[in-house]
Length: 608
Image (cartoon, rainbow, N blue to C red):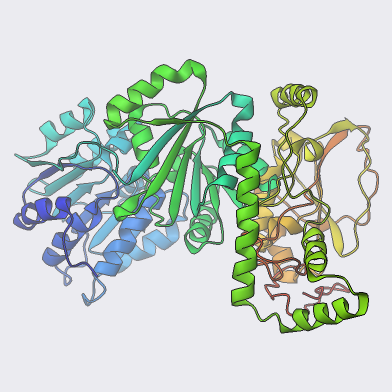
């Protein structure tokens, strides 16, 4: 599908074809993968089953992405094989690939070195070595690993080094290991994509979540990445966004690789809207639908900021980058502007009027979309009959239906009284935020759903249609509700709104899930690991009080979530006035049908 090379491709491909070393400086998203992969493929010898090309990438995600590109570009080369080797995956599948024979290896430095030292990866036949995003490998502490690989590679091999920035250690590597390289810099007035609109918001740390949710509600977004500093922050922010009704999941280095890959795939396919990630976990992510990048926490340097916002505005698409700063960080904003050579617009937190205007606009659009896309004949006849029987005007009936769709939640956000705002600010300083009501258009109050701790706090009775389960992880294991929600959502394939109360005790956790769990999902959850321990899921019965020797627990209420993307009849923005519930594995639309049943004991699927 390529018909015209990007500037970096036009510059680099001739040098790559000639076998000359290359030192290229270019911002992310400019097409550099094709710039080195296409000329490499034109020279590779498919009859030789030993590794001829090694590509080093800083992260698993980038390694997987580059390997897929090679596979796609070389699909018509008979006998061509690519191996992606990276940490977090079992060695055996990688060993099988290497034993079978491959021409191209794409991997992270640590795992590549492991295979070299084991003798399972022979670099003696390398014809070309590519260092992709070299500055990120430097930032992540891979400098010595990169030098090790360079020293183990044969004399005369071609080296192509790509980097968005060229700090001193990278220039030193180029001087020491590259032979008279062609130095290529894609000239640009800025090192960030011109298609990315950059903005900054000055906000206190306790108001960041409030600011984030307001912006997400007011602006038209597609895929969103929120960058935080720590792994714990990813879980905390993702949990709070989920409580606000957003489809949000954390992505950090503690997650198993399979879960990380599945999460990114969900983001690409539109099943997930918001990814909350650390810098390390999001390196190399290439998801075209990313419309917004939020720097929730200040990056550790300007180069990291460049890489973060490079996740949006890719391949000529427009993108939005917003950074949250405190008043004490104004100086850092100047540093970022000096690095990017672009001014950053200062904005304010959206007002209550802005939010209500957005809610009204979205409500009207939902009516337009549903009336255009759905067959409403049944409801039209029913409402006409009701109007004739009662004499009520259509406007009143429509208003009643709209009120019913709110499920008791206020549609418009109200200004908080000054005293209440001050009290809420004090709550925020203790980790409690308040904002609106509870679906995408109507946010819920964090204060109502925040963790509470007290000795012997009674649990709520198990609701109809739910089953209570016991998990063998608790506070003493360092588990947090976000860990459990993420594990259940990913492994069981269940939307967040159908996860009931989570009560974390000292040595175990109680969680309510829809009844009728299929045996395969039950066994999967039993074997799932969270916080370094197996969940060992088992039914707990209708527990009402749980004192655990007088120890307290935190009861996390998971009710009031918006309709998930695949819940009964609604889409990710809630384009329905109602909709049925979904049990495990049931993705049926709310069209009056009944979902298939699956038995485990006396449990059955609930009707869709």
